Every structure is written in C-alpha cells, then in structure tokens.
Image (cartoon, rainbow over all chains, first blue to last red; front, side, top):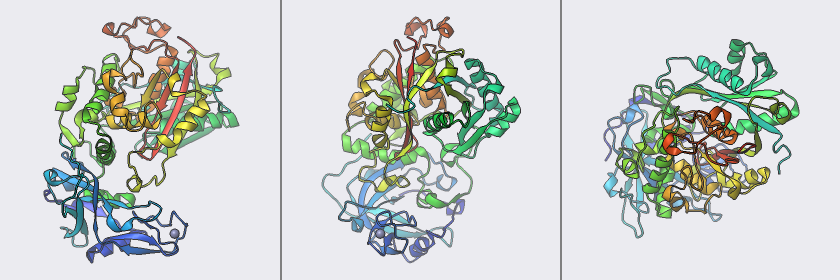
Length: 156
Length: 409
Ligand SMILES: [Zn+2]
C-alpha cells in the first residue's frame, strides 16, 4: 500500500479530448476510446482512430480488469505529491476486454494498492476508485485480484 | 549508399566543462562552446552562416549566439527535443547544406541540466512543487509515473522478464562507460567501479539503481558541419557523415505501452535505413556511442541496431565487450553515465575525436594524433578507429542515428 498521495500538488487539466474520461472516473467507470465506425479501441484518447481515421468517436466502458504486464517500484520521489507515497508500485495493466482480432490491445498505467512483495507480472488485477484530497478528482488505482500460473517477480 | 554519403563532414567540435552548477547562462556557455568548435576547425564567425539547436524550453537560441559572436546567419532553427536530436539535426544539416540554404552550420545544445530544468520535472533542490498534469501527462503524472527512469523502467522490467537478463548485464555497461571516463580528464565521475559497486548502489526506481542512471550536468556542446571540399582546407582531419536516421519512430510512438512488445524499440525500424545509407554492416563498425540515459537504453539499442540478436544483449555485453581494446568499445568519453549530460552531443563529439585519432587524453601528443595506447598511462584512443556508429535514443519509440568515418589511423 503506498503512503498518502497529495493531489493538491498536481493540477490535472482535462482538455477537449480527455474531459469525459475524467468525468467518468467520478462515476467509477474506466473508459477507453472507441471508434464508432470500425469499433477499434485505444487509450490515451487520441482524437482520431488510427485504424480507419474516423473522428466520430465514442467511449467503451471496460470491466476495469486486466493482467499486470510490467511494473516499477518507485523508491525515490520526483513529484512533491508522492513524497509521502514511496515506496510505491506503478503497474502497467493490459485490459481484459480490449483485445481485438488484429492483435491490437490496450495497456494503461496506474498506482498499485499492493506492496511490492505481493506484485508479480502475470497476475490478474482490478480497478478501484479513490476520492482524492482534491474534491474534483477521482483516480483509478489497481489491486491484485487473484492468482495465476507462470507469474514473474523481480527478486533483486 | 546514400546520395550524400561522405559528402559532408564534421569539422569542428567544442564544449564547456561539465559543471554542477555552472552559475552561468545557457547563452554564455553556448558562446564558449561555439568559439571552441570554431577554433578547433580553424573557422571564424564570418564563416558560420547556419545554426541549429535543440532544447526543452530550457535554453538560449541561435539568434542570441549570432548576436553575441557577431555572426549574420542565412539559416537558423531551434527545435524542441532531448536525446536523439543530435543525429536528427545532422540529417537536417546535410540536407540544408546540399540545398544551398547555408554553407557551414553549427549544431549546439546548451543546458543547465543539473542546476536549471531537470528531466522528469524534478526541481533543482528536490521533489517538485505543485505542478500541472496536462496532455499525455494526465495519464502518467497522477500515478507518479513521470521521470525518464520511471518511464523506461517499465520497459526494462518487462525486458528482464521476457529475456531472463539480470541487472548484472546492466552493470557491465556502467562499468565499461566508467572505465572510459577514468581515461577522460573532462569526465565528472572518474573512479573506476565494479559490477558489485553497481549491484550495491541504491535503488532509484526498480529495476534501476543509482549507477544505472546518467549524471545531470550543466554544459554546452557544439558540432560544426560543412562540405568535404571546405573540410579539406580546415585544421582537423575531416570526419565524413556516411548516413543516418532522424527520430525514426516505432508504431504508436506517443504511447509505447500498447505495443505488442514494449521493449522492441525504434532502432529496429531505423537499422536497415542507417546501414543501407552508410553502405556498411555492423561488422565494419570499430566503436559506438550508444545513448546511455540509463544502462538499459544502451543495452536495448545494441539489439535494435543489430549488433546482437533479439534478447541477446544481456549476454553480449558480458566479459567487457563494450570496453576499449575489446570487440565493440562504447561511449569512449564515459557517456552520460560518467562523463556528463548533454542530451547526446558529447557522444558524437567523442566519436569525432576518436575518428580523427585525437582523443584528448593523457597522451602528451594527442593533439597531433600521437597516442601510446597504454591504458595505465591514461590513453583512451581506440586503435585503428575508422568507423563509428552514433546510436541516439529519445524514447522506446523514437531514435536517431549516424555513421561517421575518419581518414586517419
Ligand atoms: Zn475506426
């Protein structure tokens, strides 16, 4: 479990392409961009479909589950907001329901609620939502949700 | 071969000392670096009519240098960028010279990389005060995932898992570059280190330790490029530009992390173009500069540019292979890990000096190309250095490169 993160020290500035994503976190929804023409899914929400170039876009509400594809353990804080949080784990999560027939997939980052000892590549994870100390900001965080075979852990 | 292979040359190099802090402006440092490069080449301010630079909103611009040094430029452009910009600007430069926009061109970087703006947003004194998470950073900064070490660490971790490589291979790179720094009077970190020293250094962000991370220094560094016809009249043996690539991208370049393999880096997409343009193969290369923001960036580029097979770099670097007098000496000045931090210019400068046979080491006759090759006595000249590959790194998904050829040795 990371220590407290002080979101008063980060001003998140949603923009034309991202504002709906940030509004959805308040409703505990994890969205990715989806093309209304061809169905392709991606994240972050770049403003055009890189498969068919459509700009007629919607959102796909993911199940908020995935597999840990990689991770880092931050021991030295860079941001003032994370000074009390170290050591903390940032996970790279491959979302379960964004795989497409052509091999396309979506991976997203996020703070892990687990300690380093409990984290391993290949484990299933699920999202949780946290109201931050900034009234307007709800952030997704991720938690190990089960076990798996063939996991890998950095043991040095 | 490329249409312009060997037609343009690097004729002058210069830099300020690496300081922490410089207590100077980026303009003051840049003027010194440009003056030194002009003196090195035997050029006067009136001979320079083109200038280009890269920066991160942290530096002076060409018009200020031209004003300070009494130049009137026919072409000047200052671009945004960090690592991987040097080789990309070499490509721009030879195109501009060929097209006749100017005749002799300066490429510079000037940065208070330690005392001014630090990479990853860190303040000079430590963790940053309140900051804005905009654009792509909206989906990284709120999870505490910002600095280059944190970003590239994600790919490094997966690489270790996928290939079975251990951090002892990363240590080999730290040791090799530090050994070269021990032979470089300009280097900031000169005491040799061992693999155990690396393994015992503190974590910055797992899987990267302190000795996996480059230095941060205040410095300006400069290259001068002109045609080979002009180069023959100048002071130094010319160093010919054989070929290169500029900020070549991998697919999905603005979000590495949804690519099938997050450590299949951009050099894989530039490799054939680079060696095809130069008209040589990896076996012809006598030395490399391989961008060492981190040990991992050097490691992964050895694969990307085909010096070893995919997943083999961890074995390839063992036994000191990257050290001078071994098969593929890398970053002979000590690189960003041990000499100092320039976002890449210093690595190209070192290759130029090596190819001239004029590495500025402890040999009394280095300026005339006289070297002892006695490492105990502080010689760092690579024997028979003829071809150097400069392998730049921006991110996993962006890389520039150049192959240079000398005539001496
Ligand atoms: Zn589409």
